[in-house]
Length: 285
Ligand code: PLP
Image (cartoon, rainbow, N blue to C red; front, side):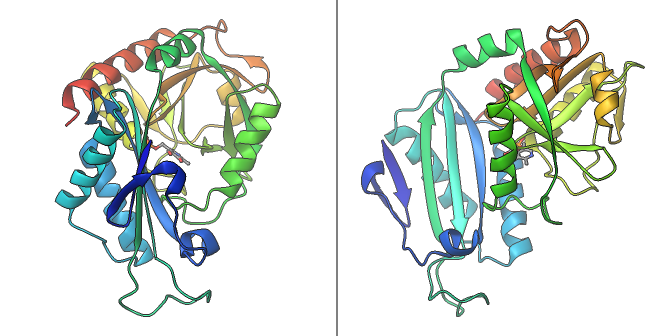
């Protein structure tokens, strides 16, 4: 496998950045993940736009034009011979002597890209059965709208889920409301049949897959309420699921060991997953 690192394509086993990289020292960097279909980028525009926003919010210089970045992503996919999988891009504030304030102007951001194949067949089998979710307290900071590489609370939540035999963790605020998954956005079909997901005014990531699902809901005439839900509401929901690049839309069949609906993926989640995949494949570039 091959990685792109600051202007060169190198074998992944040799790919490295400085120990003084601010991504390593301070988690001072951002990232994006695209799904790859037939060697092409899914939801291209949404992820590119969010990347630019994350960089701007943190005042990290935009390292190269969108066109150049696209070439890097496509070349990383091509060199890794990925047909179906993901491509990962990380941009940090660069390497400088360790000191909290921003480094001197002119410090070059670090840009790293990797790509790997994912067995979407296997993911499909998982989606047909649905997965378990474990709730965890949301202990993150106040800017979860920025897609930073500072993911330690997310890592701890996901690990807790895996140790409990669940696949994803849903994080819960001090009011008992679900914020989002550790690496996904959280959704339910509530007992009134309304699709519910937390609004993005709140402190969560504006998921690109989330936005695509909102489009599909409108197209299908499904009733939506962008309003947070409690863990109890989720446990009483007709259906539950979560969304992210790579996971697409994953039906949730239990929360903290409580069965959701009849314990099988629901009809709405199943249909939305299919529609999302059809459209994402078709629109990949
Ligand atoms: N929420 C969090 C915390 C995430 O890390 C991610 C993806 O990595 C998402 C939501 C889903 O975002 P997207 O659909 O843009 O992949």
